[in-house]
Image (cartoon, rainbow, N blue to C red; front, side, top):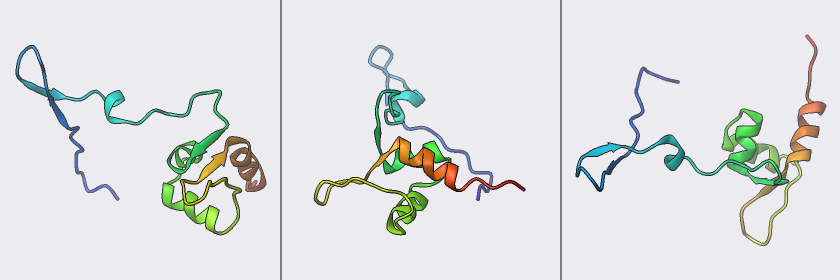
Length: 93
């Protein structure tokens, strides 16, 4: 729910001028999944589905999306599993 709040990016100090300027969006955001990668983290899977990381974790917990995990490390999701999840859940209205 957006209440008209404006998100202001963090400021960084310019080396040449000593003034502050907003960091570029590229430096603020993490790297997105490269086209050749097959496994992505929960946050990247959420971006791929147009969903939230919480929802992706819920889908993993409900065993609706397969995942890979090494010990107690992060969840990794296969892009092809995300594609098949999309295909299984398509609805025609």
